[in-house]
Length: 319
Ligand SMILES: O=C(O)C(=O)C[C@]1(C(=O)O)C=C[C@@H](O)C=C1
Image (cartoon, rainbow, N blue to C red; front, side, top):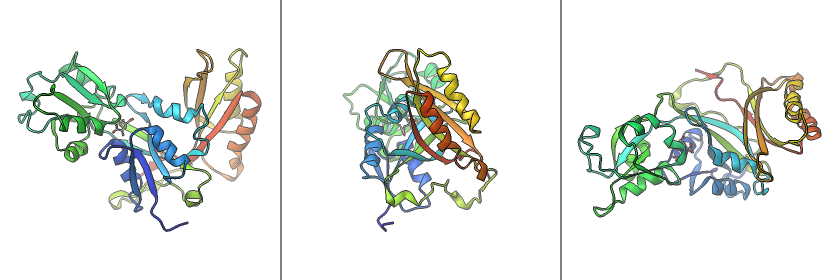
């Protein structure tokens, strides 16, 4: 492998949660972290081998799937044919309500109800429902490309502007020089986002590397039982009774434990879907070929199917 630093793409600007996840998940390496304005650009960077990896959110424990990511994985136009998942990373996500520096020195108790617009990434609204319903009912919400972008917008407000607020991290507040009106505004203290680590299967640079959760702060972590997860997408003939059941039975037949099913519109016909199935197995000699064999069988009962990668489960990791 070339000695050039690893390049890791993430959703910017700097100080987004994706930045934090990329920095933490590659903490053991001296990787160069590259901000991108949208998830699609990060996918493209991996496909074109301008980046070795991308760190992309796929699911949040409070608000569910990140549909933009599922749509990119669905890859209906075959733009990212060599991009596969090779790892995952779980990040605890604490949100703050950020305001222009100095506008409310007394914090939330001094808030006068004058904020007329809130900015954040679409995923974050649903993670802070209760706080927003209590303090910002009826206030206009504007989706922006990332939580960090929202913080940047608020930092650049002038006196003449409407007063805005952004939902983003403490890290984003410091980076963009804005104040936190209130911290930890997420509905649940265990609010966690799962990020997928993507690589290009044709890239030699990363072929021999295996993504591992970094050992942070010197904590020795042991794997209780290292499970492997696999993500497969497929479409079926919706008019054929039992087509979905037949596809799912194949996972069972090969000892693959289904852990989640997601769907996105096929965009070929209304009310027809692309299915995303995630499954897990504890690797052993007997099931070494389970995924390959399941894919072979799936090809016989689906209209199309795609292997989106296998990686080490990071949830089963115990301290
Ligand atoms: O906007 C950001 O900071 C991101 O990195 C994106 C993102 C997401 O899409 O889930 C990441 C983590 C949080 O769940 C909220 C937003």
